[in-house]
Image 1: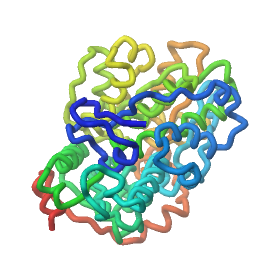
Image 2: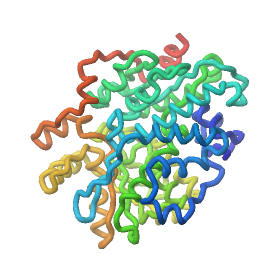
Image 3: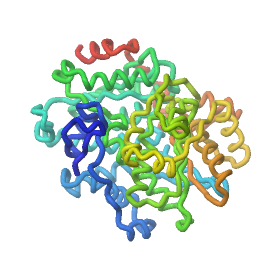
Image 4: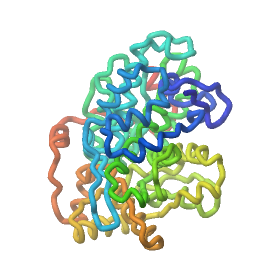
Length: 441
């Protein structure tokens, strides 16, 4: 399998090289040269397969012969080694809980898979893995986070020999638990606290990859969902959801809390590979440029606005270009399979409280956005049923969730173990030269 740049101005590369490079030299995102089609018998009998086997069959065509089957199966097994249950909330709505991994967020899947793929690439020698001429030098994983990516990447790469991780996050705009997860590990994990927004962090990271002076001295790659090894494995849990879906004759509607759009893009890719899906909903907070796009066919980035669902506070979603690529930039085709709803903070709070009181289910702010968007869709599509993605454990947002429900959230052991640790971060301004100076120091 080869991967081409969405900007069409860079050479195609292998899976391994796309993983190491992160972003294409022409600033585009890597995209598979074709979308594999899964066997209809596999989909029909999906309940008979383990999650490990499902994940292996989904990802194997993208990796091709760049790893042995044994190696890829081991990586997949380590990636999906925790439960991903589908939990009924109402008669028509279920929650796919993606927070049972080590950092209590959906990004554990992608971060674990990518870290292990990158470890294999390093083990084989970077010079052998790429055409860049570099040989066996340390890699710096440079990543921007709006919340959960940072913790998942830090956990996934912690202690990986030959890899240094530098995480940029917006100061004061991530939850206390999220901040602890990305600032307390130490070792090969470094946190830069940026006095700005997530979009500032993301712009600085993108500029770093284009800086030839910097990249000549540091081998940079990204662990955001722009990286194919972070993005592609997010398909797994859509297949796991369908495996647990009881009404196979009526495929589900998926409502996905959406910020940078990597997660929902992976789901759409899974659908294009053969997964039965009725419809996709991009559940947005007030950072809703995709909602506007579906009304106007014009994508107009705008400055991000802080909200309760902070991991979705993205004003210029990188991965939407991949969604356009999937549909060949045909707006009518895209609009027939994707809807979007904008949910305010007040509506998010009301949904958390109402769902808790009516069903006993406790959603985090992102899940609540997904749930309400799904409810609105189902109101005008009678008889359909759906799944919203519960992307993070409510304990990652204790102040807001406890205030809304009036009830304390029991701390999982994974959180209790880090909350007493001392935060270590470096405060920098929202300008690229501050980042470049840090990386060259």
